[in-house]
Length: 355
Image 1: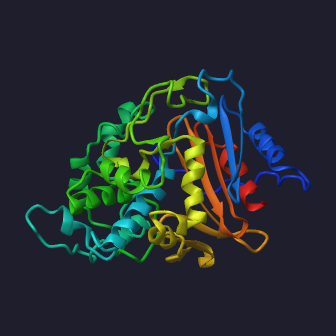
Image 2: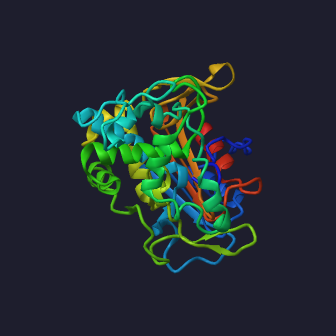
Image 3: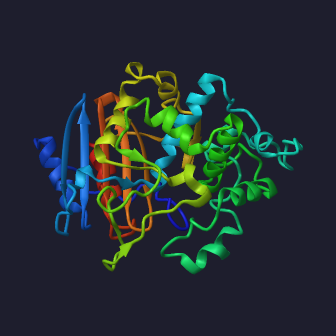
């Protein structure tokens, strides 16, 4: 999640690694390819981890691979997994109209183009725009420092209940931070539990993600982001958009999260982890790209399958991906905002593609 959009489209492919290279050599090459003060690439193959870090700046006091990194839109797989788990527990249903849980007066749950369901929200098929129309006026004065912090949960819910989607829910795919943010508030309302507590109790604690958090914790714990001119950015505040971009995690925790997707049956969230690997829609030119509840799902060049999601904030970029056919998971982070001169996503996508 960034302003105004996420970074979930894959950039042009970076050069593939040379054959015969070890994982450490491949990761070292990937680190060198990214122009940022701090860079970490972390790879797991059948549970064996290789983590390499570097960057153009001096090493921070806390080792780069021990810092927590802002995930931005790469937080959405955590919210999607939470939804799948709550559906498995029977607390909600993917076909529930979202407004049913958000209208205190018990008003009608069907909008002018049909109900927007929880599944529509998480799969970006709700018909909602990327952000509410009234988001931009309040965000513009602090576009480069804190665009989301001044837009609280109550305003996200109010904007949703007043929305009039341009397209009927379920008919078109359009990436929406707004939609996933609404989903977080729906889950909180349906269970009577704040989203932060839901994610902590149902995802972070069961998977042992002690190095993952949902709020800033200070420079000794969290990586510092940087703009392209080298100035530091403030820690991300997400306001009412927590479910769309609040997660921050260490590279080791990111691998733990991804490894759970590779071996779901050994975890407390087995049913949900299996569910989020299942393709649920096709999109793009010729409908060649598939999407699960939480992951972009593309064929790899060698005939395998890769799942991935990327994200960015004002000064950090992240990539998460895994390949069940290779027993491999990859996490990559850097403290430079995503843009044409930031090769992290292209490099990580290429590396996962060519494992």
